[in-house]
Amino acid sequence: MKRKLLAPYNSLEKILAFLETKTDLALSIVQDEWVTDGSLAITPGKKCILVKKSATAGAKINLLASNIVDIHPVPPSRFVNNMTQRGILAFIVHALISSSQNKIANEVENCLLEIQAQ
Image (cartoon, rainbow, N blue to C red; front, side, top):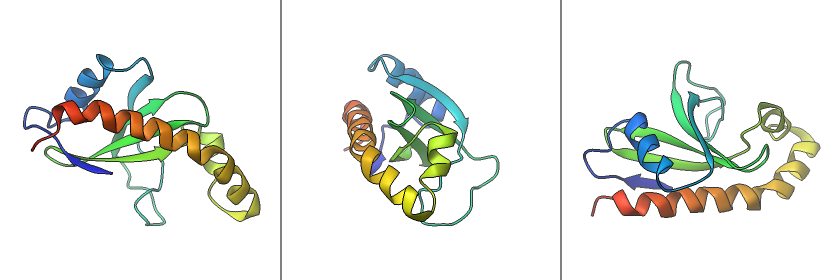
């Protein structure tokens, strides 16, 4: 879910500060270790905002350009993330937890609507 934000929100830190006033979910800036763009590799040094409700329900926010963000549902736990990467077990685990991840991503998206550029 890509969103263009208002010009003042051009960094992960500023977006994080805004979200901290809008949600009670756990928020942090972390190394991006989730493959969500269709590639098979993680970009070293890339950071994202991690929004966490539980070990299985969360979302990440990537800053694509100066004020364009991309929101993806993800499992915040490294262990659960690794379990959802390959094999039949991954398919089952992903099917069980994807709805809770989507709820968190939608909640984050709704928070960001307030600072979305027209």
